[in-house]
Length: 118
Image (tube, rainbow, N blue to C red; front, side, top):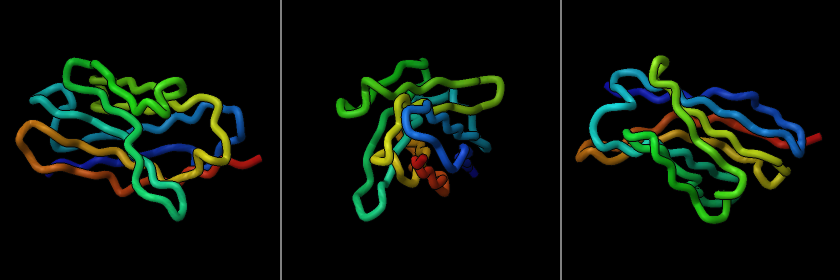
């Protein structure tokens, strides 16, 4: 059974760089044609796709976040990391990691709350 678990600081100050890690168990992030994505849901709003990293390490981002977001991976730890620069209170949201593609079921992490406030 594939499991995804987000981890992060919970609270960030405006203008800082936010880093969130997704740890994957039950499957490798380097096999099959999966997309390993990050989503977020601000309070009272819908789910927003941020971007993904694929099995080859290539990344694609939402146009609205492309200038501030990056995704990297640590294959030795089976983790992938979202970094979001210059955060503002508008980046306050529950952040989720997600796996899709490969002709398999989708999997979601449970989500992690991030609040941006001074």
